[in-house]
Length: 162
Image 1 (tube, one colour):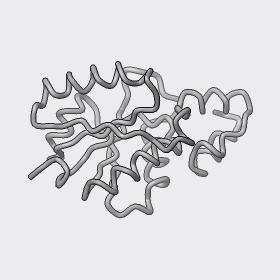
Image 2: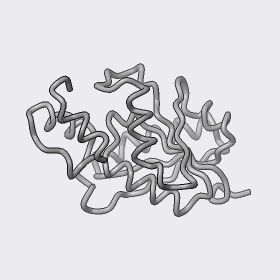
Image 3: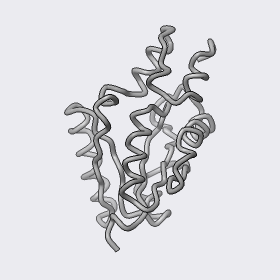
């Protein structure tokens, strides 16, 4: 079975999920019969939202796509990929600045799991500038992020506690 005929994993911290993340997930769902959007515990970096909140946001945002499921993982991505029987890792590339980091990660994942392919997808042009970090920064300063994130996230970010 080729990577294209199997499960793909789209990992990330999704703190929070943006319309750009959703665009990549939807594109992956058009290519692969089953896509697992894997929300990382992200213990290596501070997150604004808890793992439970991030899982909820991703589930709500992608609930209308039948071949996408949402899960969480901790530890090595390659261990999770093997555990779920996936053959492909989906990564989004927004700009040249993403390229070097993503290639290093892809090479390391290949070393850890040679049977797993990394597939790079680019978002629609309208989402190429979008990042969770920028969304959080804009929201923290009182800016409107409703055109950048799903409504469930925008609603949470409008609350003064975030």
